[in-house]
View 1 (cartoon, rainbow, N blue to C red):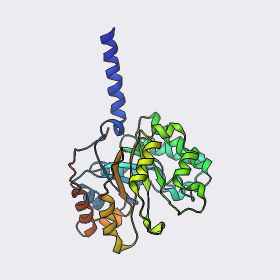
View 2 (cartoon, one colour):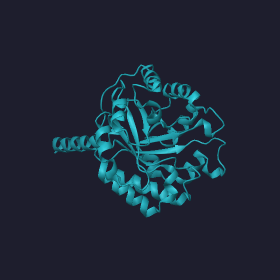
View 3 (cartoon, rainbow, N blue to C red):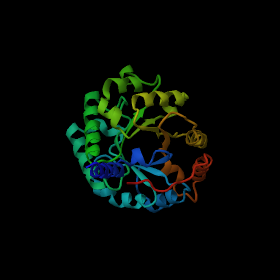
View 4 (cartoon, helix red, strand yellow):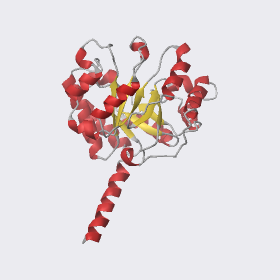
Length: 296
């Protein structure tokens, strides 16, 4: 009986591990992410991603009011050269969707790409003041979280860092977390990312070590990282890329991320956009060694 019980337990643990890649096989792997906000010029996007020396993680922004079928080709092509984080809906459009519409969209995209998307971003910049009523926001993202979790898919939530850059103090990132995020998400999210644009916050330089130390206390089981960064000022882009992709954060669970928002604009095609090499050098300069694909 003991031997049979041990074998059964081993099989159950192995099955659980195979579905929860974010917890088991990514323990020590850094994530270097980029964002693709449109999938036209797909051949050049794929080539740019393929030429990085480290297997990137590409956030695909699924545009508002578009059916999942419109992204089938792009998801398959990008999946061949990169890991994928699927953004169910950009924060700017969350207010335009009813709770039921957000649920339907989550069902549609997760069903369509569940086996291809490695991380499901169930909520983007969730504490932003532009997303609508907080109860509505939480109902939307909690549904997407539970939907992905039931399918044993890896989940991520992206917060919006807004130190002294909010109109309503209840949207300050840490206060919003404490007042709105339930215990199931605090202990169950595989990734928690932080979006930050210095241009929107008076060029403030956060103490990221303290930020991520604090987030680890709140989300003790989650991998942590930067979920969006970038600047629209061309003379600052190289500086920002180097600063973010070479961050030295020692918080438990920190895995990088970054997800430069303007990758398609700045780095595609890789043969003619000098910022592609800037990004490549920033990653290589961290002395990372690619341990290959971590998909499930």
